[in-house]
Image (cartoon, rainbow, N blue to C red; front, top):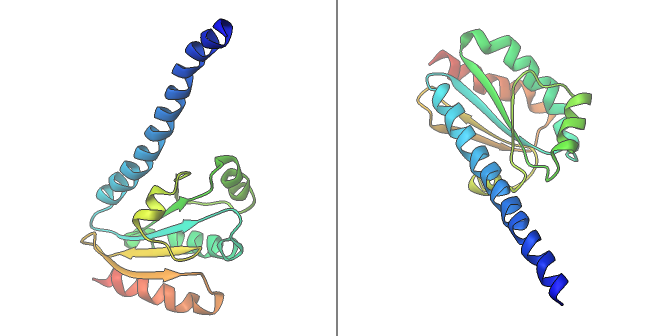
Length: 157
């Protein structure tokens, strides 16, 4: 019993440290998004939530890369938020589907909860003033022209 108590005394600080590190990561993902949105004020921001298991996400990545490349000079910024619990899964996805835009990791889903996601992927479009003006659930190849037209319209403002 005495040995067990000694082990618990030694392990318990590690457990608390682990929990506080996780909390820091969560807070960092929320503050990271806030910082990125603030840094890109005056630009149109396409914010996309995705997961490695999401089949439509595989189709959205090439499109988001194309939009970033095509409209970056006009003021478009693509920011993505990965909601996988294990970052290694997201990294494997990105190895297969490269991203030329920022990726924020949200393993505890705090950002996802804040945005009240209804499906994957989910995207939100901020206008140049920093206000969310459009939202989409899912990614549909046959709607790519519509998605692009929404961005172009905001970029003109």
